[in-house]
Image (tube, rainbow, N blue to C red):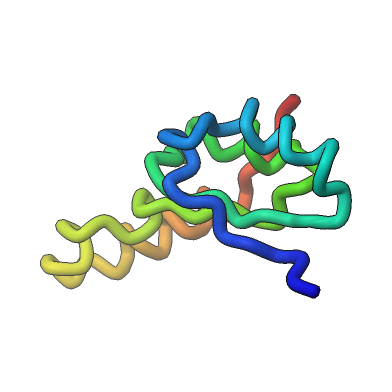
Length: 87
């Protein structure tokens, strides 16, 4: 009965083309791809009907966390929220 899944490691498993291929035989399944997805790659994933969201370490990189650089994490999160899907 599960319909939502994490798709990891997304890029290594074929990325956007792999998720497009899964849409046919699994029309009711939605994914949250993570793994080597960058801010620049995220819009292509978000354009897919079977993608609910994406995850990426670009939002809170280890160096920001270690430095307590919460302003940079906030700015990165705002960039992520502002992403627009592209086909």
